[in-house]
Length: 128
Image (tube, rainbow, N blue to C red; front, side, top):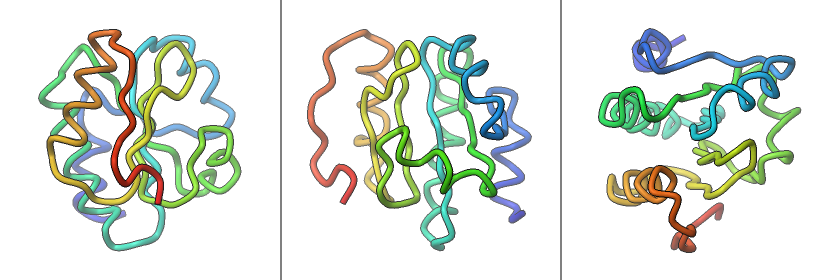
């Protein structure tokens, strides 16, 4: 792993998830982020953002880092077409998705909506 991914993994709000652990993790976490790093260099940039989200939202938002060995097997289940991708999860279901590197407000406003139970607004750029 890279230093950036190691820093995310060591964050107290982050769990590394294998496919077999996903349903249990989703049941325990009403609100959370699933992070698909992928194999593109920008995945490391998004990892920095995800770590900052975990820090900013502390105990209110857990991060599930999908183990890279399982990404391809579960990406379609969560609507992921391209990686890196952050899927904002509400009650076990995808609420919003941000693919590729975006500006901080795109990530943080999606987190705010998730935690405020507001209806998600479409994100420009979405999964393209």
